[in-house]
Image 1 (cartoon, rainbow, N blue to C red):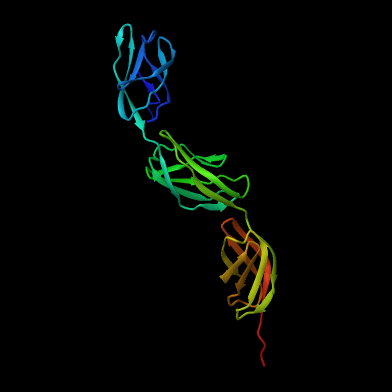
Image 2: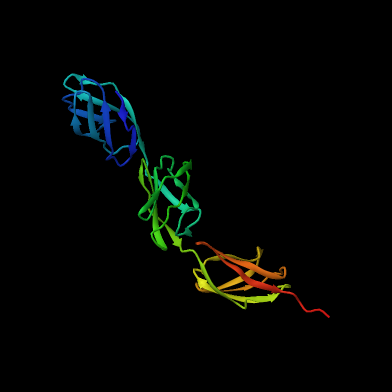
Length: 247
């Protein structure tokens, strides 16, 4: 007498189908000491809504002919999500984040606002999930759905990719040390600025402006790359290193 599914939330409410023989006219289906609600019944199957419960319980069917053998049903506690490994990322999605918590081993879905993804279960306390694309920049609720239920939401922020509009000045000595004002959009979460691949020190003034100090470089034009939580933007040949004078 198979039972499907054989596990569900401690709060009950799971639709469970039991198959076997001589099941018509069932008068009761018990999950442990509690009675389920029968919603459909044929000679070979019974569909019920399980009651609340906990742990592993015996499930049996009672008809006018007697009581069946028992099958096992596992009640699973609701999951708890505690934190995200990273609470922001590009609006385009595609980055991988971890979800930390408890009771996550049966997770089937992680929802980011109205979009969802299928996670990889690392352990009962951790999931890994590739973030789906967001509809727009901004904060969304993140919830995890397991056999035991759905977590309370955590917050994740989608960040638009940056753009670069201008660099002032656009040239300076190859010895470095030039203060360059970089203008664009989406710069508030800047994590790195490079000139020709070399890291520069920088300060973010606001979402449209940052100031970087050029590192030493090789004479000639170089690409300037600004990396933020939303992605990266490149000003091709955006800065030119100049040779110093000689006599």
